[in-house]
Length: 406
Length: 142
Image 1 (cartoon, helix red, strand yellow):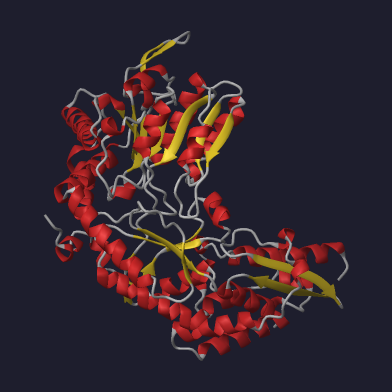
Image 2: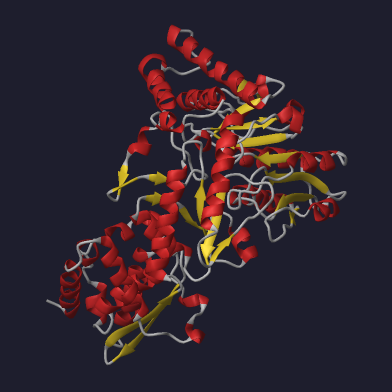
């Protein structure tokens, strides 16, 4: 089934907007995606007809909201093919999911001199929490290097795995480069040495089907807002055996079994990790976003996005003095580039005046920019609603940039 | 009216000539290109203005009781913006710089650059210039 893009775009009201007197061309999807009407309608319906605190009151609304919330957990379980619904923990987003593991896993399993292995292309959210944990426990952070194309050095990875390695944390898809990492291979190699693996899936879930059992990852983290859902909500998937062994992350209501002043016992999964009143509305919005993706089908989305990426890459290559950053063989719809004679910030400023939204800068991945020895890039990132016409507008915009600044 | 106000008024009148953003930005880029160079040895990290996506080096000195600013940036639009600030604020008494009203930025239609999300650090450039001026004012050299 192929996607009717023009019809689909009608589902995203924000795309009909005019910015700086020009029709908006939204190409900053790796930062956040726009939301379809079904997601916004779900939020509205919750607050209009279902709002109440869950797992607490015995009244009608509370049981209805609890039911909806737990149903959403099961939808998400199916979406990522988790073995159990209680392996799906709701968080504020990918960042909180990683912080949860960095805090709880490390508290239990990391000792002085142990090593945590990340990669050279991580987002700051998958660097800093580990640095903080290493500082707390006297552990060492090691980094898998990458090549000039922006692909991980798998030989170096194998050599870096040692007796002291306690965890590998890698991104599924690089937000700055678009590289799709061979996570299955990474996991198999690490598991052969009994080392668990956390995968940062923030950039992957909008673009490809995720099967955590087939992948066999120990943790998988992602955000609702990057996959057409609301902001402020995300998921930590964790294997039951790890989640059971890990201590709670935050204390509060809902995560307890029994509270006394001398001793508190904790609730079972998933509630052990969900202290306080959860973000019910946005969980339901995220569920609606997943249903929206499923209704289109991952395959149809990938076909459209890959064809657009190919078209965009071919077109942009026509430009003088363009340098692409991130040219991995396996990549998603991220075009990270700069003109060798124009600062990316200047390029972004002119594109903005033309109604084209891209991101410029280091994309929260400063080590990646340092590796390529550049001040940053211009990043155009694609989503299922982008069109070839929009790529043509970007192309014309970039020609204008050269006219003005080269 | 201080010398700063007069310069700001001059800039406002100059920018009124442009009807469209492209002419305005072309002018800004030209202003950046015409900014006197600073020597490479002055491009030290300690002169960098924080919070800019592009690098901006900003230096100040005191000449005949007036603060003289020099600057450079690796991005042309950012350099144009800092050139505008220098045109209005440089070679003025420290006290006037500290108290300067910089609403001309809004009036010439560059208000969007004052927003924090732009991360060009215009606000930080202004703050840094005022801090230099304040330091000279306090040290009583002026």
